[in-house]
Length: 112
Length: 116
Image (cartoon, rainbow over the protein chains, first blue to last red):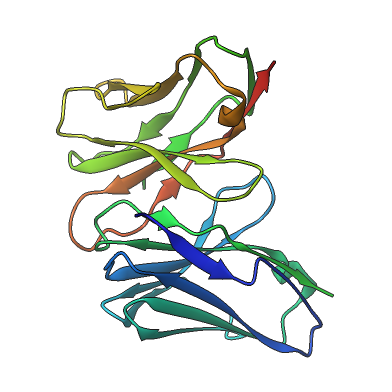
């Protein structure tokens, strides 16, 4: 089973809202990732968690706040987003950072 | 720095025929991994195939196979007996070997259209 799930599938939020994206995997993977993907572009890495510790933050603005409550869950908290933050947000996981990554279906975020 | 180039923004193929998507990369490293990912309109990024640089044998997964030419730094994907469900964006990706190398370097993608 190589399933990574993400909720919600779609999210529309205003610039003053606070919302969260959720990602879950039950494959025993110890690395989890957040990516941002604009239309017709490859994904851009935002954050990497390894063994529930944030190991990489690719200079992402503080209006994006990741959280890893346990080894199966990854959240992305959103606050005071800008319209240019509208994109597909992908979560991925892997056995470790050296192994291939498996992606979830993504959350389509629209900021109005 | 490593780079990945996919020179074909779009390709089309007749259903049941064979198509090859090209990918070239630039690196000075000897230990690395290469991947092909598929992203259908449903948006989910799906791992198609993986190749370790130290392996001479080309990876295959059912109708998908690669032609890995290490000296030429080329990693093309061949899809045999194309099916309508193969229509998607295909991304080639590179990752350095080693425990701390998590970063995937992505190509720009190739949109594959399947004609019925």
